[in-house]
Image 1 (cartoon, rainbow, N blue to C red):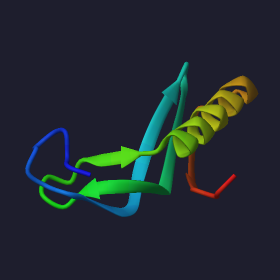
Image 2 (image 1 turned 60 degrees about the horizontal axis):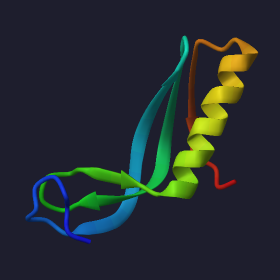
Image 3 (image 1 turned 90 degrees about the vertical axis):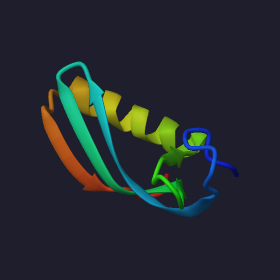
Image 4 (image 1 turned 45 degrees about the vertical axis):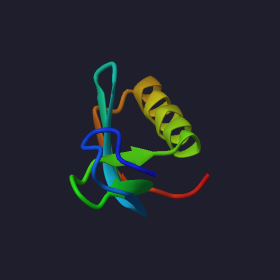
Length: 75
């Protein structure tokens, strides 16, 4: 897919580190499947991975966690 940010690069499958903030909880997840622009480095995370990250952040927030760093695990 053509990058919507730089409009010059093509995306390639890879991984990203994603930070999600939910209320007072900060979740950092490494190794999230994402397409990355070969030109500018913009990262695109798919719907399924995004939904999983948001659910995880919500669960951590409800549990009272402030900061959590983890590796991505397919749901």
